[in-house]
Image 1 (cartoon, helix red, strand yellow):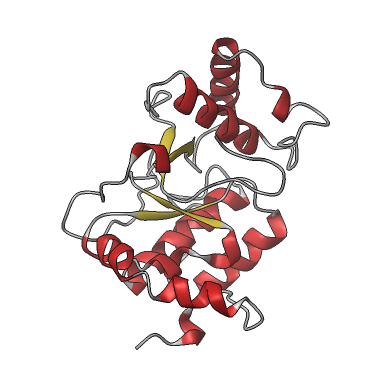
Image 2 (cartoon, one colour; image 1 turned 135 degrees about the vertical axis):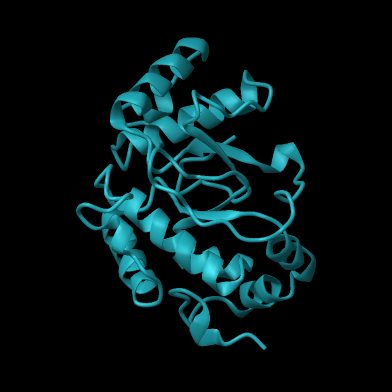
Length: 219
Protein backbone atom coordinates (compact mmCIF):
# COMPACT_ATOMS: atom_id res chain seq x y z
CA UNK A 1 0.00 0.00 0.00
CA UNK A 2 1.28 3.46 -0.88
CA UNK A 3 1.80 5.82 2.00
CA UNK A 4 0.80 9.33 0.94
CA UNK A 5 3.46 10.73 3.27
CA UNK A 6 6.17 8.99 1.24
CA UNK A 7 5.40 10.94 -1.91
CA UNK A 8 8.07 13.69 -2.13
CA UNK A 9 6.64 17.18 -1.61
CA UNK A 10 3.15 16.23 -2.79
CA UNK A 11 0.51 18.57 -1.43
CA UNK A 12 -2.95 17.38 -0.46
CA UNK A 13 -4.48 20.20 -2.48
CA UNK A 14 -3.27 18.64 -5.71
CA UNK A 15 -6.20 17.63 -7.98
CA UNK A 16 -7.60 14.24 -7.04
CA UNK A 17 -7.96 13.13 -10.65
CA UNK A 18 -4.20 13.48 -11.08
CA UNK A 19 -3.55 11.43 -7.96
CA UNK A 20 -5.77 8.64 -9.23
CA UNK A 21 -4.09 8.46 -12.61
CA UNK A 22 -0.70 8.86 -10.94
CA UNK A 23 -1.10 5.91 -8.60
CA UNK A 24 -3.04 3.60 -10.92
CA UNK A 25 -0.55 3.63 -13.81
CA UNK A 26 0.48 0.07 -12.90
CA UNK A 27 2.06 -0.78 -16.23
CA UNK A 28 4.39 2.18 -16.20
CA UNK A 29 5.25 1.67 -12.53
CA UNK A 30 6.15 -1.99 -13.10
CA UNK A 31 8.28 -1.03 -16.09
CA UNK A 32 10.33 1.42 -14.02
CA UNK A 33 10.67 -0.79 -10.96
CA UNK A 34 11.97 -3.77 -12.94
CA UNK A 35 14.36 -1.92 -15.23
CA UNK A 36 17.11 0.62 -14.87
CA UNK A 37 16.13 4.27 -14.66
CA UNK A 38 17.42 7.32 -12.85
CA UNK A 39 16.00 10.55 -11.40
CA UNK A 40 17.52 13.97 -12.10
CA UNK A 41 16.54 17.57 -11.43
CA UNK A 42 14.79 19.67 -14.04
CA UNK A 43 17.18 22.29 -15.40
CA UNK A 44 14.43 24.93 -15.26
CA UNK A 45 13.65 24.43 -11.57
CA UNK A 46 14.36 27.41 -9.33
CA UNK A 47 17.22 27.30 -6.85
CA UNK A 48 14.71 27.63 -4.03
CA UNK A 49 12.75 24.57 -5.22
CA UNK A 50 15.93 22.55 -5.75
CA UNK A 51 17.14 23.44 -2.26
CA UNK A 52 13.83 22.19 -0.87
CA UNK A 53 14.24 18.97 -2.88
CA UNK A 54 17.79 18.59 -1.60
CA UNK A 55 16.77 19.15 2.02
CA UNK A 56 13.88 16.69 1.70
CA UNK A 57 15.91 13.89 0.09
CA UNK A 58 18.91 14.35 2.37
CA UNK A 59 16.74 13.72 5.42
CA UNK A 60 16.31 10.19 4.06
CA UNK A 61 19.49 9.35 2.12
CA UNK A 62 23.22 9.97 2.45
CA UNK A 63 24.16 13.20 0.66
CA UNK A 64 27.75 13.45 1.86
CA UNK A 65 29.16 13.01 -1.69
CA UNK A 66 27.65 16.44 -2.56
CA UNK A 67 29.46 18.18 0.28
CA UNK A 68 32.81 19.93 -0.14
CA UNK A 69 35.50 17.35 -0.83
CA UNK A 70 32.94 14.76 -1.93
CA UNK A 71 32.98 13.06 -5.32
CA UNK A 72 29.81 14.90 -6.40
CA UNK A 73 30.52 18.36 -5.03
CA UNK A 74 31.70 19.76 -8.37
CA UNK A 75 30.13 21.40 -10.20
CA UNK A 76 28.89 23.18 -7.09
CA UNK A 77 25.36 23.85 -8.32
CA UNK A 78 21.86 23.25 -7.00
CA UNK A 79 20.80 21.28 -10.06
CA UNK A 80 23.75 18.89 -9.74
CA UNK A 81 23.51 18.35 -5.99
CA UNK A 82 19.72 18.01 -6.09
CA UNK A 83 19.98 15.49 -8.93
CA UNK A 84 22.30 13.29 -6.90
CA UNK A 85 20.04 13.44 -3.84
CA UNK A 86 16.86 12.91 -5.88
CA UNK A 87 18.34 9.82 -7.51
CA UNK A 88 19.47 8.39 -4.18
CA UNK A 89 15.91 8.83 -2.89
CA UNK A 90 14.39 7.42 -6.07
CA UNK A 91 16.58 4.30 -6.01
CA UNK A 92 16.09 3.72 -2.29
CA UNK A 93 12.29 3.86 -2.66
CA UNK A 94 12.14 1.36 -5.51
CA UNK A 95 12.05 3.56 -8.64
CA UNK A 96 8.29 4.14 -8.77
CA UNK A 97 7.38 7.11 -10.93
CA UNK A 98 6.05 9.03 -7.92
CA UNK A 99 9.46 8.68 -6.24
CA UNK A 100 10.78 11.04 -8.92
CA UNK A 101 8.07 13.67 -8.71
CA UNK A 102 9.34 16.35 -6.32
CA UNK A 103 6.56 18.78 -7.20
CA UNK A 104 7.36 18.57 -10.91
CA UNK A 105 11.00 19.54 -10.51
CA UNK A 106 12.40 16.12 -11.47
CA UNK A 107 12.79 14.04 -14.63
CA UNK A 108 13.04 10.26 -15.07
CA UNK A 109 16.15 9.47 -17.11
CA UNK A 110 16.75 6.38 -19.25
CA UNK A 111 20.55 6.65 -19.18
CA UNK A 112 23.12 6.94 -16.42
CA UNK A 113 23.58 10.61 -15.35
CA UNK A 114 27.02 9.88 -13.85
CA UNK A 115 29.67 12.38 -14.91
CA UNK A 116 33.37 12.31 -14.12
CA UNK A 117 34.00 11.03 -10.61
CA UNK A 118 30.36 11.50 -9.57
CA UNK A 119 28.62 8.15 -9.85
CA UNK A 120 24.83 7.94 -9.68
CA UNK A 121 23.40 4.83 -8.08
CA UNK A 122 21.54 2.48 -10.41
CA UNK A 123 18.86 -0.06 -9.59
CA UNK A 124 16.89 -2.70 -11.39
CA UNK A 125 18.19 -5.74 -13.20
CA UNK A 126 16.94 -5.10 -16.71
CA UNK A 127 17.78 -2.66 -19.44
CA UNK A 128 16.18 0.79 -19.44
CA UNK A 129 12.50 0.56 -20.44
CA UNK A 130 11.57 0.81 -24.07
CA UNK A 131 9.75 4.03 -24.74
CA UNK A 132 8.56 5.36 -28.08
CA UNK A 133 11.20 7.81 -29.27
CA UNK A 134 8.66 10.53 -29.87
CA UNK A 135 7.90 10.36 -26.14
CA UNK A 136 11.47 11.04 -25.06
CA UNK A 137 13.47 14.23 -24.72
CA UNK A 138 17.16 15.13 -24.60
CA UNK A 139 18.60 17.30 -21.83
CA UNK A 140 22.02 18.13 -20.43
CA UNK A 141 23.47 15.93 -17.70
CA UNK A 142 23.33 17.81 -14.38
CA UNK A 143 27.09 17.48 -13.82
CA UNK A 144 28.11 18.99 -17.17
CA UNK A 145 30.71 21.79 -16.76
CA UNK A 146 29.77 25.26 -18.00
CA UNK A 147 32.33 25.24 -20.82
CA UNK A 148 30.78 22.08 -22.28
CA UNK A 149 27.25 23.46 -21.88
CA UNK A 150 28.35 26.56 -23.77
CA UNK A 151 29.88 24.40 -26.50
CA UNK A 152 26.63 22.45 -26.81
CA UNK A 153 24.64 25.66 -27.23
CA UNK A 154 27.06 26.94 -29.88
CA UNK A 155 27.03 23.64 -31.76
CA UNK A 156 23.26 23.10 -31.69
CA UNK A 157 22.41 26.69 -32.55
CA UNK A 158 24.91 26.56 -35.41
CA UNK A 159 22.92 23.69 -36.90
CA UNK A 160 19.43 24.98 -36.11
CA UNK A 161 17.70 27.71 -38.07
CA UNK A 162 17.42 29.88 -34.95
CA UNK A 163 17.61 29.74 -31.15
CA UNK A 164 15.38 32.69 -30.35
CA UNK A 165 13.57 30.92 -27.52
CA UNK A 166 16.64 31.08 -25.27
CA UNK A 167 17.44 34.71 -26.07
CA UNK A 168 16.25 37.60 -23.91
CA UNK A 169 12.45 37.92 -24.14
CA UNK A 170 12.28 34.36 -25.50
CA UNK A 171 9.92 31.83 -23.89
CA UNK A 172 12.82 29.76 -22.50
CA UNK A 173 15.20 32.55 -21.46
CA UNK A 174 14.35 32.22 -17.77
CA UNK A 175 15.90 30.81 -15.73
CA UNK A 176 18.92 32.40 -17.39
CA UNK A 177 21.35 29.53 -16.82
CA UNK A 178 23.60 27.64 -19.18
CA UNK A 179 22.16 24.25 -18.26
CA UNK A 180 18.60 25.44 -18.91
CA UNK A 181 19.45 26.99 -22.27
CA UNK A 182 21.63 24.03 -23.28
CA UNK A 183 18.92 21.51 -22.41
CA UNK A 184 16.37 23.33 -24.57
CA UNK A 185 18.55 23.59 -27.68
CA UNK A 186 19.97 20.08 -27.25
CA UNK A 187 16.42 18.73 -27.29
CA UNK A 188 15.52 20.86 -30.30
CA UNK A 189 18.52 19.43 -32.15
CA UNK A 190 17.67 15.91 -30.95
CA UNK A 191 14.10 16.13 -32.23
CA UNK A 192 14.67 18.00 -35.49
CA UNK A 193 18.20 17.29 -36.72
CA UNK A 194 19.81 14.65 -34.56
CA UNK A 195 17.70 11.69 -35.64
CA UNK A 196 17.18 10.94 -31.96
CA UNK A 197 20.86 11.07 -31.15
CA UNK A 198 21.45 12.58 -27.70
CA UNK A 199 25.17 12.30 -27.08
CA UNK A 200 26.83 15.71 -27.25
CA UNK A 201 30.23 14.28 -26.28
CA UNK A 202 28.74 12.36 -23.37
CA UNK A 203 26.88 15.33 -21.88
CA UNK A 204 23.37 14.53 -23.14
CA UNK A 205 20.84 12.27 -21.47
CA UNK A 206 17.47 10.96 -22.65
CA UNK A 207 14.51 11.43 -20.31
CA UNK A 208 10.94 10.14 -20.40
CA UNK A 209 9.44 13.10 -18.53
CA UNK A 210 8.50 16.21 -20.49
CA UNK A 211 10.91 19.03 -19.44
CA UNK A 212 8.52 21.75 -20.66
CA UNK A 213 7.60 24.50 -18.19
CA UNK A 214 5.36 27.55 -18.41
CA UNK A 215 5.46 28.88 -21.96
CA UNK A 216 8.71 27.04 -22.72
CA UNK A 217 7.61 24.02 -24.73
CA UNK A 218 10.08 21.27 -25.57
CA UNK A 219 9.43 19.77 -29.01
